[in-house]
Image (tube, rainbow, N blue to C red; front, side, top):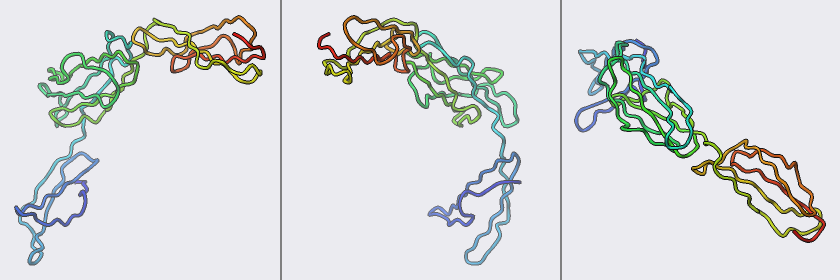
Length: 231
């Protein structure tokens, strides 16, 4: 067979007379191991042992990868579990974990596969962000399709706020006062690419176009200069 020892092939027995060794492989199939005792003289051990490597077939998949961050809409992640023979495994315990991001699982994060080896879990969030999901099946990490990535996006515009970030600039035509509009949804998530149009009265010069789109932080920023004292 095809395998590789992890570390040295020579191992010293511990206090219990044990000399464990680990193997890895990227080829499916059996690997036979033999060993020799080197004390006091090299002596082959009479028996051999065989271990088997299998290609992991279990996988994670995203069934619905995009939802509104409103604590109602859901994303959906599924896992399908197979046994060593490649057959769907019923009754396997699949435990889901959020590797990063902010969300909650709808219901238990630990589910049991059906007769076709499937489990399905849903996620909700009030925070617009990307979430990565991993899982184990009967304690063994699922590698294929992991991590599963889902995204929660802002909801409709619920609040707009006009904010003065810098005031009382020198009236020299160079120094800037800064105003911005912040656009968010009902949960305070910033909304990008919202259309904002500024209007102003008084003597000033805009440092850019008056029609803008909000940035990734939900802001549309307008600098103003003037050579005239006053508001």
